[in-house]
Amino acid sequence: MSTLTKSNHIGRKISRIRELRDMKQEALAQALGISQQTISAIENSETIEEERLVEVAKALGVTVEAIKNFSEEGMINYFNTFNETVNDSHFGNNNHCTFNPLDKLMEAVEENKRLYERLLQAEKDKNEYLEKLLKEK
Image 1 (tube, rainbow, N blue to C red):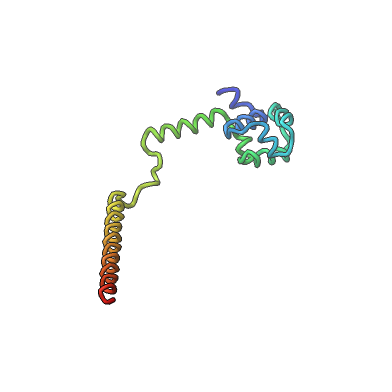
Image 2: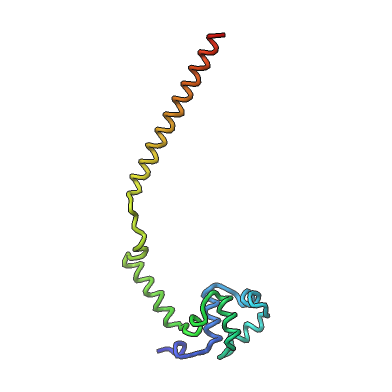
């Protein structure tokens, strides 16, 4: 087991979660209304006050428990499971089509044909009506 997994260094966990969320220290500092130097100090601290931890968690978009329980090993296992799932073609298992897309496409084509024929007939009827009016004059 790695030392990072055993470590309960809250600051390091905050730093890694911030990095994984592609957030710079400056952005986190701005979200919390504090300086970047204070964020740096927090990330170098082994412990953090519970109230501050709640604020940081909210700014990072995670729960306090997610920060406390974060581990590099857990993250790697999560992504390995994700990759195995993708490689096993199980990704998106809940997204099965309940219809044949080609059937839907052909239905749309047929509907367009019917609409075009109606438009064409309406134009013919209009032209016939105009010709009839012109002859009457």
